[in-house]
Image (cartoon, rainbow, N blue to C red; front, side, top):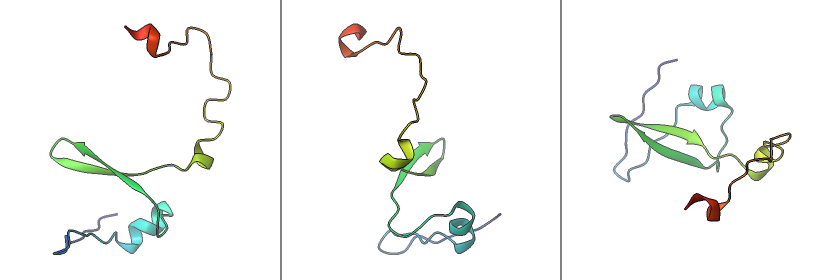
Length: 70
């Protein structure tokens, strides 16, 4: 999929419909901009509901908190 967009005078970019639909992005969704080499990577910020249970079954041994780092 190849799509382009133009930066407006208000520094806004509209994400092409084909890209939005392919990734199921909705209006009001939050995104993070991550510098990557000479460009920028656009990634959706997950909601708390999407993160729920992500560490289920993780090994809790050898856990280090902030006090163990120094």
